[in-house]
Image 1: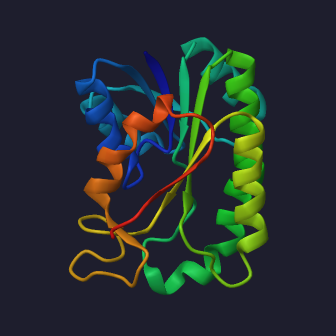
Image 2 (image 1 turned 90 degrees about the horizontal axis):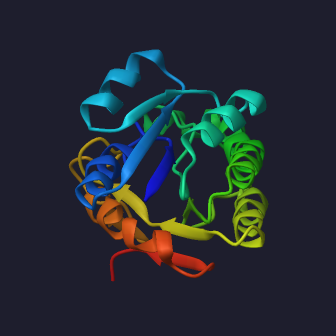
Length: 192
């Protein structure tokens, strides 16, 4: 299967690439950072340098790869947890405009599977944006993956566990590939 992974250098994306390749998939890993294209290549994927807000370039990138599936792991989050409130509108834009653009590109490419990350909780003031993001994915026949708060290497919680709902980032990544063929619905990945 050919899989276009948007958000390939995020904390889940960098873990997904080797898992998908080990399963025999051909992967294109999208990043908006020139500096991260080598990382995508080193993980075994074809790097795609593209900004999700450049619709024409995005459609060209996705359609030229001819994916069977598109995986949306895009976020716009700060490096430090303390700064997350300042990035809320940027991450909301990823969930609205970014999701809309990626769904459009997947449709134009004729991808038969679409999977998008979401979260298993609702931050104050953000519920409507998250709900609209999930509804757009479901209307398009895709799968919404609600991850718990991620902890482990490369996350905000490297040495301690956050409150529930939560999931170790490696477990979240391992649980994702089988969902590519899952029927369209919301799947929640959290610890018991």
